[in-house]
Amino acid sequence: MAQPPGVASPVLPTLPETPPALRACLFALAGLRFAVDVRNTREVAVFDEITAMPRAPRHLLGVANLRGTVLPITDIRALLGLPEPRPARSARTLVLRDGALVAAVVVDTVLGLEPFDEIVPVDSPSAARARGPRQFVAGWIAWAGETLPLLDVPRVLAALRPTTRAGESAQGEPA
Image (tube, rainbow, N blue to C red; front, side, top):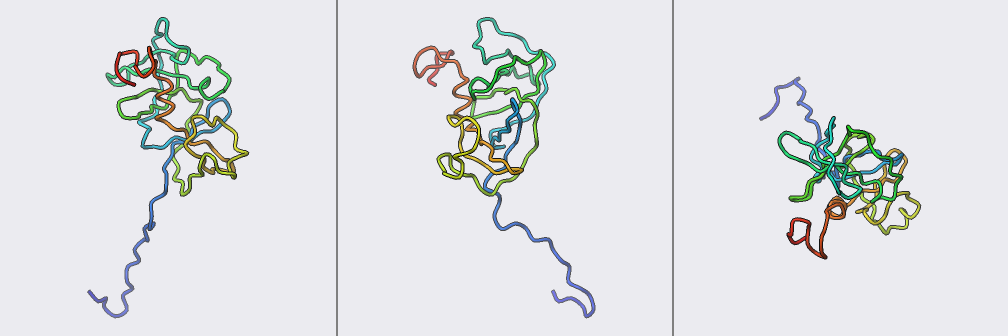
């Protein structure tokens, strides 16, 4: 429909033509910054009380109730090659998921959610000087002048899952 003379056409905001390659949740742990894909992030949760589990692996700090769901509370510092101070009885966590696998991972602080247009491949020469664990990295992202590891959540959660025999979980299910 044509505008009447002397009336300006409304200016509509332009939408980005392509969505960012990644939307990531950024967090700090042991003085380093990390990122995880928000598609593998359920929420941030603070647990005031964690129930210890007898004979649990060292990374399993215990379990806690999140709105009727019992979640394992895990410390991934050792997995990432970081110093392992044991967290207090309460913990700030990032609840991660990969399909049916869900765990609350202890973090020092959550830095926020950010869009990223580029993910640098793990073996890229430009990421050669980047600090951080490489075994659990899916790629690298540039943020605030740093190159941060983008953690491979399925690989991290699989490494945390207890196993009894090769290829079988502690519950007797195929891993």
